[in-house]
Amino acid sequence: AQSVSQHNHHVILSEAASLELGCNYSYGGTVNLFWYVQYPGQHLQLLLKYFSGDPLVKGIKGFEAEFIKSKFSFNLRKPSVQWSDTAEYFCAVNGDFGNEKLTFGTGTRLTIIP
Amino acid sequence: SQTIHQWPATLVQPVGSPLSLECTVEGTSNPNLYWYRQAAGRGLQLLFYSVGIGQISSEVPQNLSASRPQDRQFILSSKKLLLSDSGFYLCASSGHSNTEAFFGQGTRLTVV
Image 1: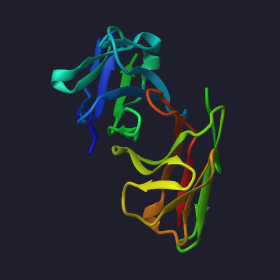
Image 2 (image 1 turned 180 degrees about the vertical axis):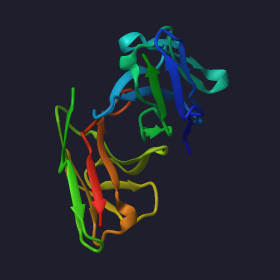
Image 3 (image 1 turned 135 degrees about the vertical axis):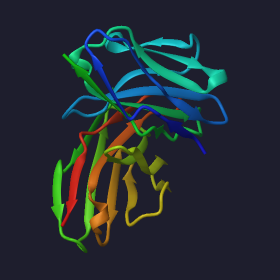
């Protein structure tokens, strides 16, 4: 069965600090990987996704993530965070056609201090 | 892109009463449909997953059931609500193979 682990439950950073949120997955086949963000009071939105090709994926708002197959990881990064990045971040995984069930991690709450 | 309509936004129900939450999807056909429950510190727990009309996979044993009477309609139900059914329920839709999921605004259910 597929699973996703997000080890950072709550991260607090000052503005302009660099960010890295960890995501590790367990899945036996070809994976699709996602990062979703939920801003306070808003619904879940896609931040970025990896299906194939370049393992370094760039998303919206300056976020990027790197797929490292040997480590089963898909960590989210941003070189300089802003107060508006305060939100909850979720990593998710599914497989190819026929194995498309989308499984989420427990989420990481990010608080940016001005 | 897809639009997910979910209602109601909030619901307060007494213990033992029935439940019906509806989700409809626009902008796609034959989607994969999902019901999740979101709880603080526990992320999104997948409750039900459907790849087509009448095809429902239950992911966790619980007091809830799901049905898909039409291609773009997904219903979450209970015959008798428990206090532990309180939570935030999200409906989501995705295409088949290499597509992202789109989420509704969610329903905050409080069982009293």
